[in-house]
Length: 184
Image (cartoon, rainbow, N blue to C red; front, side, top):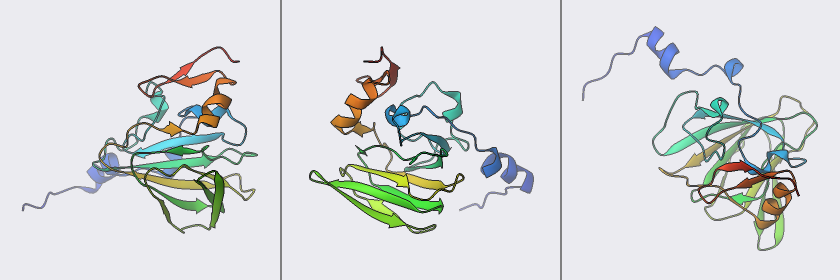
């Protein structure tokens, strides 16, 4: 195997993302208008299961990855800043970077939770309704999410989330795209 030569300039230009340059979107998902679920989504590597594919702020900072995507979830001050209950066709790994976060999931109809400190790691199995929320008051709290698999598919929302989102004027079409509708 030939070892590629990568200059420092090429590494910086094509393979480095500076956190200070990581602006994202506050409307990547159906649940982001729901109280407690406001957050900024930054697709760092690969396109996550984003529902608002037309938002230029969701273009991955380092393009496509093979077999995973890496996403920053930035806390919105005053909000729990995590997703409502949803599932993916793949596992999902959460790593708090700043702040204390709680990863939540449904065991049947019962909500379960586990608190994570910075650099703790949890992997949520495929098919389990999950979410997370910041449980500290740090305005710069940050959660790293890694979604595995070559095709993570669409987000499948818990039915209660879909009903609440309609009240804010958002729905997801059959192809998993976010659409504006008349608020109920």
